[in-house]
Length: 447
Image (tube, rainbow, N blue to C red; front, top):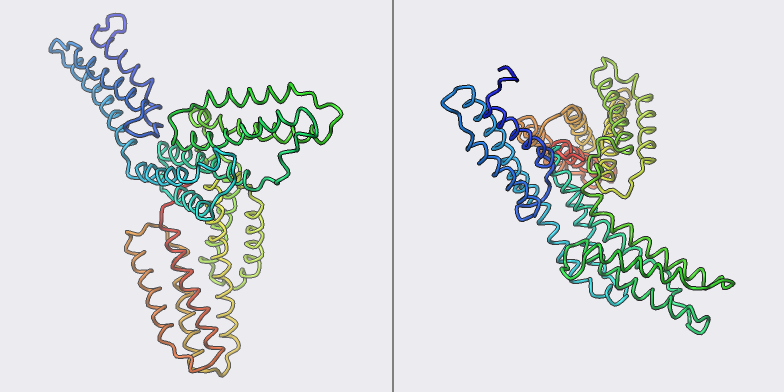
């Protein structure tokens, strides 16, 4: 259609589509829940645009009717995506875990309001368990889920850091007020900082409606100004005391930026993270070595060089910076298991080759264990090549094969032979490790 003579209805539809397009990325990246203000705002905008589209007159013209259908279909698609993001099962799972963290914090928050640092071991273990479970929530690469997981982990990890920092603090404070007139003021500020610590934890976990991040920021900035105004020249001990309290305030202030950073940063997208890139580089090389070994006609020649290089890859993984990020820690843990599993595969192959080259007389039970180890080696080769999920027939077949080998080991009677007992124990551990590795490969976890 000539743009100069474009029908007003077509022009109006294009304007509406442009407005819908302008919020598309907000919808795709929406990581909240149905009762969030932003959800209701986006829903209201899209619903309004649907009404606008419906009100456009087509005058019975086919091209306008088709344009209106396309505009309505695109708007409805975004509405549906918004609803799916907010109600996704894994988004609900993240929220459910966060609710557990809130309940845990509510029970322990009182000591921090009063400046105490008494934290139970159950609380520390509970927070760690919550972080681990959040780390294992599957995102499937979906932006909204990755953002939700990242934002929630950031808050819970911040609380963990605040508490650990408070508990580890040396009991050197406060100083005696007799030392200098300024000490009384510093002691007073320190008490307020301890209260602010409790308020910050409550804000991060959403368990208070009486305070805001902005007001707490003003309070902490005011305390900082009070400390700056003190004259402590010539009193090194008191100056150091003031510096410690100032450092405490600065530590708390950095957590106040979390909410703003959550909306403006792409830190949730670990695909370009330096540490993740190093891990992926190691995994790429590990897979190349694995393919060379599994496809080689005479892999025995590659065992020594491959194992040496794999040990070097383990060293590279040890040097990866975790950046206090549980997802990076989990990615590194999985990578270490991947590399270590391949090293174990080579070790067993070498042992089997050596055994075949130098046969000797042995106890029947010990021989039975080695026969099973030979079967486990073959199965491990298949597991290393496996690339699917837990619904695949091949996964079920491999799981059954490994279970059979465990049963076969259980049926071996060592007849009091210590050497056989040790060999069977090692074989059982190997079979269980292969099973765990198969589960790890098929659980579809993504950072």
